Length: 516
Image (cartoon, rainbow, N blue to C red; front, side, top):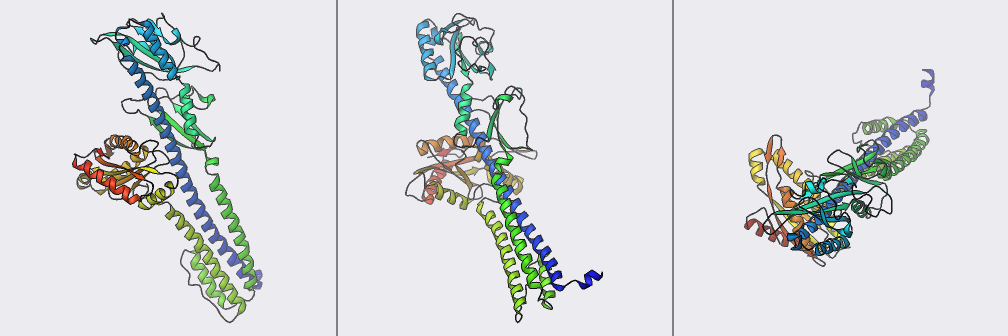
């Protein structure tokens, strides 16, 4: 007690200011760090989710194309009689030459004997016990990834790695509809590695991993070589992870492979860790600076001290202080000015947080871009592109859901629609909510803008028409879409006006459709 009574007034000031500045700096630094970390994590998760969807979409499109090519060959006239083996062999070799991903293509008779094949491999052999024949004789068959059996020793394998295939087969029928044989193909699984490479190339980040997992047994079909054939194990303590299902494309139903994309947390959030380190460093420097100033100015403070401490206490408990300004004593005036600067600095930090929140430019309900975000994206993107595809989307039947089930159900549907719309576009494109149930999509075309717009519009209608499960209710909405293009020199408003006009034509023509 004696030590406390004899303690100098400047020491009391030093201790008080030290604690106050430390608390305020900690609050500011932690708040900014937490907000930035959460924001960055969400962006990483969204980017990984878009990559997973992109990978799944590319794999489905590849399988759809290959099965379509084989089906086209099966419908040619030589396949209706199987009489001209040389002509059939030439057709098969041409297809394999044009699409090297076909490791082997063969045609069997109705008993499963190979009568023609690429490079005459397995010609005369019996594949009647193989699934590619047994399932193909019944109808269209696309089999999951499997190891080579009959072809392991017959096909060239310069790398010596394990050969894996995906099977495709169709029944062959004569002009009367009678089954006369099977056309079968083995696709080399190497194409999946090439698809993965094309997806990863624009990302330019070797820390991102992509895994393809079988829907049959959960084993890894593509990914880290050490994990192929093993069960995929999610490790969310170490990685940020997203996934997508390869559930088909157009009339191809898909094999429901699960695409996992993950990135090491340390790498993904490295910029956040650096920012947190900078914030703590600045906070430490400011803490030291203000503590030293408090010690220096405290030596000459007497009566005004009480009012200053009360103001600081208000700040400690989150209240906006009425910080007094003292005149007449130079030391007190300087302390008062310093404290004003301190609170100005803290206000700047809080303003920084508000600025970060406003930069997001997202719709409060759905979490996707709003009008401002759409305009900012347009201004940035049109610096590099001369054409864009523009889709105006309006939900059909949405008002009935609000009327019958309430606004909570309506909000749920809007959020789910936003998610589905995001799944239909690529990671460098945008979907925005600009009104109640009105959305706009901007696409970067690699072909004619209206062709790309039509393709995506069909995809959107398909996904929106699927039911929305709200509690125990199955809710159904449709959507009408207007497609237009933006050309260099035009404003976004003009392009959207054209797509709106097309939207009105779609609604007038019966809704749940699109018009250009």
